[in-house]
Length: 199
Image (cartoon, rainbow, N blue to C red; front, top):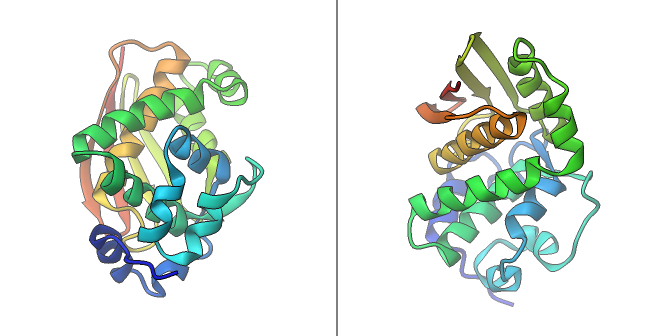
């Protein structure tokens, strides 16, 4: 079957050495991808994404299985282009999906066990439970965090950086914090920086 890959996906992959096979060391748990695909017509993406990601669209995997971060990002960008009218709409949907994911018992218990003083370290630990080959670190000044996600060059496009911000917001909301604000500060090829404020 011929595949006419979406231009935004092609532009993303063109930046990566090895394109769809780039950075095999960077992986994400399938549970994250499954959360993004839930309720979407995954079959509608088959004709517009590279064949390497088709297995992720055509069948389910164990939620704890590690999969390529590049493959996951390819799917996220496909979802954005196929099912959303704007980047803002996609990011708003990401917030809801991250709330759903982080409210699952395993993640909710992890977040609630952490004290306020340990929440910043807990964010790094929680991230490492879902991602490997990239690293999240937090510089904490009580209710203000500066967050850095270090990753291979161009792995995280700015749109996904905005979605990472929604994940941090959702995690802190699950922990019980109010008035959480999280926004991207900069998008560098090898580092995405976010600013977080909460009460």
